[in-house]
Image 1 (cartoon, one colour):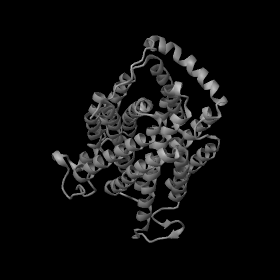
Image 2 (cartoon, rainbow, N blue to C red):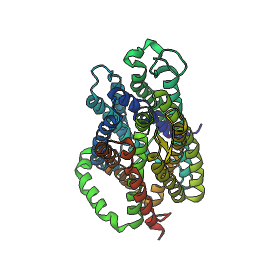
Image 3 (cartoon, helix red, strand yellow):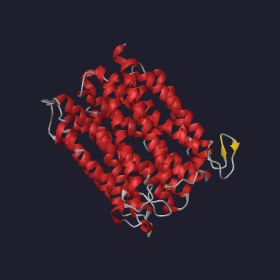
Image 4 (tube, rainbow, N blue to C red):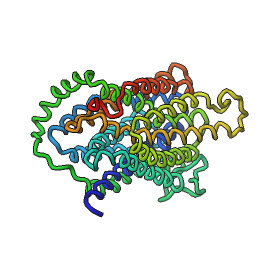
Amino acid sequence: MDAARKRIWGWYFFDWASQPYNTLLLTFIFGPYVVSVVGDGSAAQTIWGYGVGAAGVLIAILSPLLGAIADKAGGRMAFIWLFSILYVLGAWMLWYSAPVDFNVWAVMIWFSVGLIGMEFATTFTNAMLPDLAPREELGRISGSGWAFGYIGGIIALAIMLLFLAENPAGKTMLGGTPLFGLDPALREGTRSVGPLTAIWYAVFMIPFFLWVREPPRTDTISIGAAIRSAWPELRQTLKGLPSRQSLFAYLTSSMFYRDALNGMYTFGGIYAAGVLGWGVTQVGIFGILAALTGAIFAWLGGRADSRFGPKPVIIVNVLVLTAVAVAVVFVSRESVFGMPVGPESKLPDIAFYVLGALIGAGGGSLQSASRTMMVRQAPADKITEAFGLYALAGKATSFIAPLSIGIATDLTGSQQLGVSPLIGLFLVGLVLLLWVKPEGDQAV
């Protein structure tokens, strides 16, 4: 394998290594575990919303500044090392969330530490995308990276379900007790998701750190000078954004639809556990299905991106996800899309599995195309600055979905109505795409 190919594969391995934080912790294993320990689905969803929302506020404040510093001083790899440590530490500490004397706020703090590490590490690795290959190949590379990451998530989730996570009877999906003598009564099998996620990341980041190299630069300045100049230059950049209509519209659009998508990922498993009464095993199957469709459609979406451009891919997927956000509100144990069902009916479960498959398909393809759209919108000589703005757009309102869901759930006392703010966020993002030019402002 030549050096260029190794570099691309090393970059893919970040998606593979980091995906379990989303798949296992944020959505399908640890989130539902918190619901089961708290015992009140609405209360758990409210606390989860406030906790993840607070982490989002911190990410929004620090992300653009750190991006500006790295852009001036170079050394993105050093930042990735730093935030990888936070990722591993935050994930590992979730082991200490035993149901006895469960402190949900302490758990949320450690969860947020890992989440912050994952988000910042993702910001800096995304900024490396334009350096991997010619522009016309980036759609395919981005899609393949997302697909590879989803496959990693599927394998990690399968390991949890088959060998570690216990059901109410204390058995794994294979019918045995959790590996390594873990005690089902203390939920040690399920809690091992924290150390598993940490070890998974540490092991599979090795190819990334061995094979990925930043292009040499001669225009960097000292870290001290970069810190001093970061805020003034960032302020000037933000002031000039409204004059670049397409870039400004795209950043604002993606800010809303990515936030809505993250809300779906964050609360999908919690919603299923609270509204449908699913256990860890059912939520895990739901997760495998969503990750599988995510892998397939991220790969297909990358091919469509390279052929048609990212904008049509983004529009189609936002439309699909908006429809899913509407449909989710109408699925409960008592009725499906307004049709009453009996307590033993499997129709609510089937409907939610289908919706989960659509969330995975739309989410994988949407995120892949969004990365390459940023390349289309950015001037060739300011690509790193543009990805810093993309990070800002992704984080500046990352607290809106979880906080709005937390508030809506708190006010209504209903998990179903609690997720309805996602519909509005998707629609705002869709409308703003009208002002986005497929090739950006420079094409005019």
